[in-house]
Amino acid sequence: MLVVVCFLMGIANFAMHKAVAESGHPFVEDTKRYFGKHFSPYGSYAIELALLIGAMLFAQENAVLVVLIYGAYTGMNGVATWLLLSGKA
Image 1 (cartoon, rainbow, N blue to C red):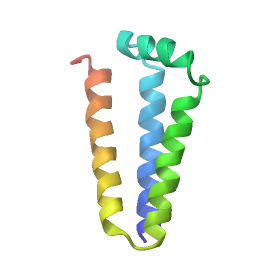
Image 2: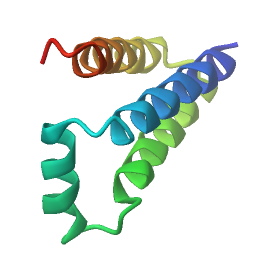
Image 3: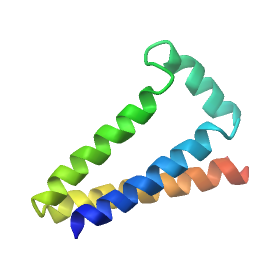
Image 4: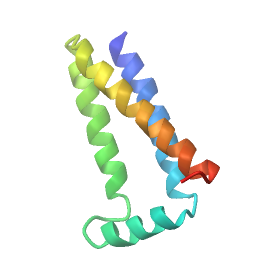
């Protein structure tokens, strides 16, 4: 059950990541330009995938604390996405 919860949070994280990456917000564009030199254009997606895989591996071992931490991470992503897309940031 924890693995499914992590997977659903991962889907939400990837959707928020894509929405922010395509938003055209000046902060996001500057960040992509800077980190694009060091990572590939999809490096941030690779980091997001690594976090999801790690959380799912821990969830498979019934590590509830890690799932809660990943849930907090998802919540913070949600707040940041809302701030950037609503124009409040």
